[in-house]
Length: 340
View 1 (cartoon, one colour):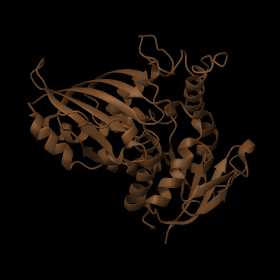
View 2 (spheres, rainbow, N blue to C red):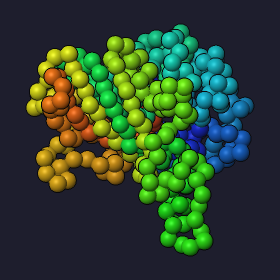
View 3 (cartoon, rainbow, N blue to C red):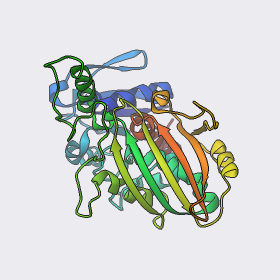
């Protein structure tokens, strides 16, 4: 016996990936429906070998449905997630709306799967920010061994993290630079993204950090350990899919790089590719379409007593969003709903 599953926002990049991953991982489904905004009603989307026509999110009745995967943004989530929850349908939300609500679990299954048990308070589970998700997957097994005190992370985030508009702007600007008179001015981003990097994701806060950077701090504390100190610099780069992170970790206890490499090789959700030679590491283009979080460049930091550096790469539309949501649904089914 399977579940009755809703995918809201099924025509967007993340919604389509949710449908793909549900089919790929053979999530136990008796019935599935794809929802979209009114302007996209009737749009066809793929679910395995099936084709679904989207229905209207605004008028949909969630009564009798088990799980709803939401990829519709915070404003729409604010309207429709409580309706789904009130109808007894558990919402797994990809927006930032509920991430910092103490009554809503914020879950990365490889890190804190047990947190899903708290879904009953609001019938909602939050999916973390894409840059946070891959980082905490890498940090968790190391934290279990040597206890992390501080993390300094610099991100190199692809334009797909800004949605279809981000992808289109990079594509159009790149083409326009080669055709005189067809240059494309920045619209989605604050400056030209083609052949450039932009140290600015989301809005600026009073302390000079951006909201994206604040998210990484707050979410790491909620998911992994409230005592970890985190400082982040988040940068948008001209890559279509795949987020990369340079992570510097300070531990309470010494952790040798060789032991760290062995620990990460055995950790769930991680693949280590770490040869000290040209090409002996993973780049974003190689992680597209993959489930894993890839770790490379593991090395001791000699400037502090108990420090390591590593390079972390993952498909942000998958582990950073859709895959993590489906993994949450899998954990929810096994631990709580137990129908499939």
